[in-house]
Length: 313
Ligand code: SF4
Ligand code: ZN
Ligand code: ZN
Image (tube, rainbow, N blue to C red; front, side):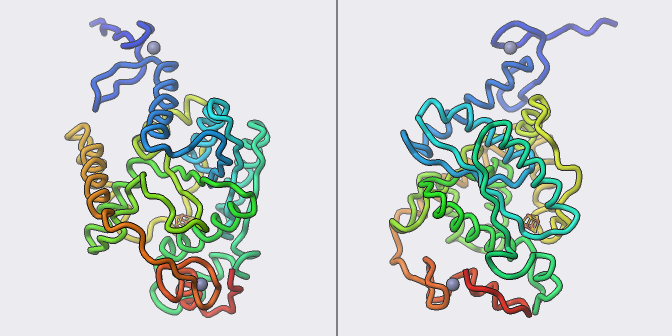
């Protein structure tokens, strides 16, 4: 029995990929171009990167952030943007070494300057040490995420970048949305809004140019462009509810193509409605002097939860 070949919707070459949620058949080249086009469209729709911006890109060394850096390096010329890569070394033994070596090689090839900041230098301990010394049952990713945000901010300020791009994709965003729904964190839902401007003139604008792309399509883009894949997952990544939500959303999408995109649309609408109250009054942490929404910032609260003598960043 012969299998009928399907042609690419754009160029009539043999199709290689079926984009189930849109019904398009694409060849390899058109698929790769579609990822760049979709990213460009997201950036322009939400004015994420503006003409002449100095752009920082948070690069962990995973497929998503390396793909983002590659796509942005192609788009940077269009708007005269200078690009800088920032990598955070949390201090996770037998894991972070591999991704940092990928990042060094990748940024060298793209000729993008790289800045590496470590928890050890900023806070005086590695994530591994902190996790051994946690006073209460503290979820590693919650702790790590708060410390990483501060580390990126400090590096971005040092590089004088005015916008910081992270590689969060559609899957990451809707997983966080579902987690916030489950725990009743309404305030955090508005962070989904890509139009959100920084809370103060001292804060750096953060944007997510991959926010409308499915994770599996970024993986495919990385594969087709020979972008290196990290062979081992973070040893702490199994903790928390995110894994269960990820599996649930994947099975939903497999049965109902486009379901994830529908959730993103709902999250965006909710975020934009929640955002109408405008800017909150800006405060500075009484312990470290950094911007904060309360008198003690999240980082100082987290540092108080480990039996170590941290440095205040
Ligand atoms: Fe940090 Fe969690 Fe990411 Fe590991 S998976 S690097 S602990 S945020
Ligand atoms: Zn094609
Ligand atoms: Zn503080």
